[in-house]
Image (cartoon, rainbow, N blue to C red; front, side, top):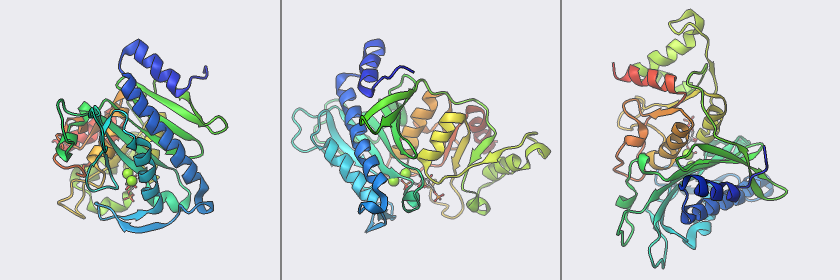
Length: 333
Ligand SMILES: O=P(O)(O)OC[C@H]1O[C@](O)(COP(=O)(O)O)[C@@H](O)[C@@H]1O
Ligand SMILES: [Mg+2]
Ligand SMILES: [Mg+2]
């Protein structure tokens, strides 16, 4: 593949499809640069003061890891100068963060999960950063949480960085999904995946099976049929993978197919799921759908959900289209 840098691709995309105004290109480049800095911090491990707990709790009631806080700071600082950003929302911050002293008001809203897969930080397993970009409502004066509460179908860009053996950046602006690998020597993002596509069918599923006794009947039925393999109604064997980093599990699915599930369960009946709609489920759903896959909460398309809270949770069934449709159908029969 010809060496194409991130900027070259974004400029080309604007010229060909007119989907990436210069302001959005700038925003994506700033996020990409911040992810490069986070990748550097992650790579230091015990050699840098990045491991272990930060000793503080986030709005989700989770104990924050040092890297959760460091990654959040890196993304805030990188975007603070504002450019065309009006405000930021993060998994690690209860309230939204309006960009100070911005006249005229920026036209974009940025949301992120600064460090995804936090339980894997201290055990050197792949982690990531997830981001989503929305348009600020016309005529918006002072950004409020309400301005962010837009369905996922309104996203103008979304993607993730994955910090594994290679550091990659994968995103969409509504014209397919492209993947870039960080050339550590040059410090530049080089395109290595063009128009990523997910097969409609798969023999691989991903779920935290330790919660099986708490699952509701549709999920129990679906997973039992997968586990029954050739001897069961599916008539073929299925393999299982669970990395416990959503970014890593979904990057695998984007690369070779599969279905990822984090359903609601009886442990906390009032909780609609573990993962967060605005900065985990929506951005990953946009990427997966742009690669030919599907994403539902068991009932409806995730990107059609009208959000009512910034940190709301949602059940997630995402990946190869035919499997997502089957498990969703089991919820509706
Ligand atoms: O520990 P569990 O229940 O398997 O959950 C793992 C899931 O939780 C997450 O770590 C939640 O994300 P954060 O690490 O950003 O809080 C997902 O990445 C992952 O899919
Ligand atoms: Mg996460
Ligand atoms: Mg996180």
